[in-house]
Length: 113
Length: 112
Image 1 (spheres, rainbow over the protein chains, first blue to last red):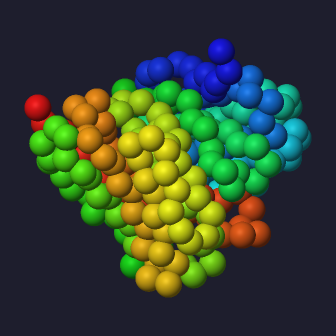
Image 2 (cartoon, one colour; image 1 turned 45 degrees about the vertical axis):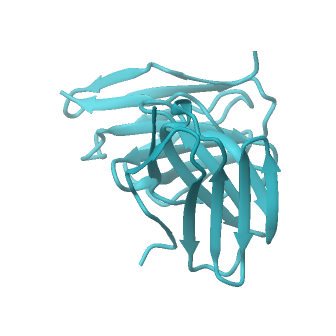
C-alpha cells in the first residue's frame, strides 16, 4: 500500500530536549513538507523539500530543523529552542510542485512533560 | 486579515441534506484550489482539486470556484453521518512554488 508513514503517533518532550519526528513515503513523490496544526489556526508550513539534499524554510521554521538525505525520508527535529512545541505535526508529500494537492500522513501529537 | 477565511462552524445538518462549505480569499494570484477532509486526530485527506474557475464533480462532491468573487465552495449531496469531519480549503498561486495556504477548517456534523 502506497502512503506516508509518520512515527511515533504520540511523543513527549522534556524541557531542553531535542526530539525527532519520522516521516517516510513510498509514493515516489519528489516534494515533502512538514506542517504544524494548532486549534483554530489551520496548518502552518514549517519546512519543505523539493529534492534530495535541499530544503527551504516555511512560515514558522524557528526552533525546527530537517534533513533530506533520501527521497523517501524527511525527518523533523524539534529543538529545545522551540518554546511552544505542543501541537499536531503533519508530514505531506506531492508530485512536483503540488498543484494537484499534497498527501498527508496520520500525524504525530507532541506534548511537553 | 487572513489570506483565506473559512467559517469554523460547527455546522450541523440532518442526514441526506445538501451541505455547502465555503472559503473566501484575498490573494488574486491563487489559481489552484483544494478541499481536504480531516477526521478527529487524523491527517487531512485530499478530496478534490481544481484549477482556476469552474465546477468539478466527483461522486457526491462538487467543487466550485468563482475567481471574480474570490470565493470557493464544496457541496456535499446526500450527506451521511460518515461525512462528519472538519473540512479544510487550501490554495496556491501559479509560480508560488510548493506553498499551500490553508483555511482554518469548518467542522461538519451530519446527524441521523
